Length: 413
Image (cartoon, rainbow, N blue to C red; front, top):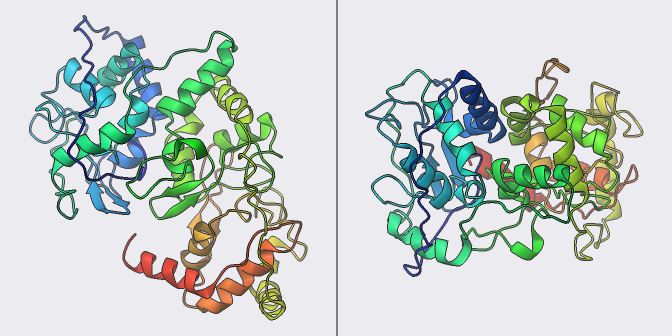
């Protein structure tokens, strides 16, 4: 139920094996419903299944993908437009196999490739909670995909190539905490859906999992424990603080990640957040592919960028890029500034963004947009400057890249 987790395509071969759990009486106690509520929050279901200004979980939120736009489904218990007539087995098949009750394929913008790892008990607990929601009559708009992608049967070919159903299996050689973190990251939290690079067909590049990827028009940085773009310099405590509050001394959650914090991770227990951090810190490195500067920045571009920085940025982020504690994030050694793909940096400068609001940090500081104030070249120059200074080492940014991002924003992508 989370973010643009890349789409699909073609091929009509190889339907993934179905796995329908046997029907068992479902626990509908208050405790079980509350457990389901927690799991729904951990799965970040509200973020995708609630349209801007719409009713919670009623769907119809546009999910942009490289192939077109899909609109999220209504998961309230409305019998006509939601899941009110779905049985427990229907819901299990959707989560575990990516199938609708009538056997049609769901598109992998719905992250069933990750939810398939969930246990049967957890899936039924989620259904128990969703069944208690107020039913909302909300017809969802039709997907906007070109043929043959608009034909749901084409997903069978995609599944044959990229989808392997199956519940999470604990590693007996690892601690219970590590396994809990793996379950949340690899399954319910579906972090790799955004934080992994994808191939041309929208499938995750398995050998590069968690090395950063595109999601909903933004670039999600690497979660590998490497320095620069990754989490190598982040401590377990800093990861927990970021996921719980939306900010730490290194960064603030903005864009889609702000929604993840607001709708999901801030509700998780400290134990689960710690487990997530432990698992992320134990991921392998980036296979030697350092996300550091490989091209020299033009001296004129650096000088122009410095002037833009002093004029437009230093007032908040400070002269030496150190930011203002608990208010404006530092630019110095910032993992987002090191991103191998500068799309998110360009988006933030162009359209601005609000940081996450949480009980611990309710300010919701915002970065203003400069699309009407700075040219594509100005933005490219200042991004090139900050990516080459303040302890940062990342590649220059071209004005053509900023122009592409500006165009995507104008098209609602």
